Image (cartoon, rainbow over all chains, first blue to last red; front, side, top):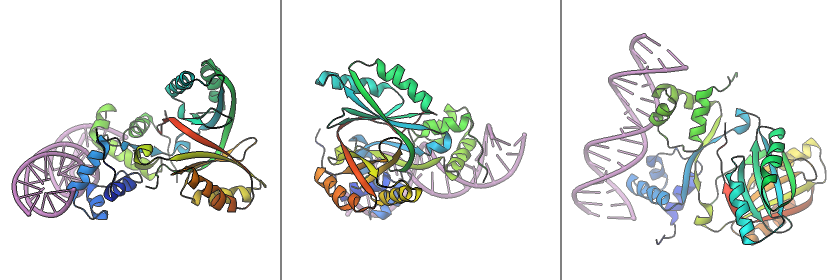
Length: 155
Length: 155
DNA sequence: AGTGAAATAGGCAGAGC
DNA sequence: GCTCTGCCTATTTCACT
């Protein structure tokens, strides 16, 4: 499948939709100086080709219920490709793991864990994370407050 | 302003919308065993009261252009409330700062920085971050790959 | 707070440039 | 690949329980 590069109109659509997905095709068409049909067809194409992964609602999590956020840094005891891949796959299964990054340098992985409270986080570390193979040292960074959380990238 | 707690129907709406914001009111109504009007009214209320912050499109960023992600840990040289607040406010202005967390323990802040490449990140550190007052030590964790990135919370 | 129906606006497809 | 026309489905409001 040959996927062509994005032109300025495509980027314009993505830029606007990642800030507000409820813009109508009419509104997008006006801002991008096109009529409805090409905008509609481009959005359809951008979805099919996977540039747009999903349309979601962003919630004010702290307002709904107080949450505890932690970023554990994890050292593995082996660094073979098989071990790294297995760790990623297994840890991604846990629903409390929101994000998983493979890092350079003196740490192997960083996770973002979101749970109701510190007790639940303690349970996660002891019962779920510690049960995985090849886990070495774990150092947890705990979040006191969150000052910014954007999802929109500049294209 | 008195904001009442969320009932099960509200939580159901939020749970579904944070996974797929393009569900129609009809579809939500069926799944939650209500008719269209109450679902519509509740969504409107949840937006007005700020439980829903935004509806956005999530993009496959790596597919659109290769990106460089880093998590700098930042120590400040002073920890007065004024300094902490000033740091948060100033750093949140930078568009490349996607997230900003105030942490416990041996680090003060962690940022998530997204930029086109490592060169741009180097410039960010030298020209933008270093120009802020009260910056002490900065230790950067660089991302090799990202295995998971969810936004939906379990309510 | 809920249902059901009626009005309006937006998504989506076709013909032609 | 774009504009224009038009249908059809979803959103939004209203009268009522």
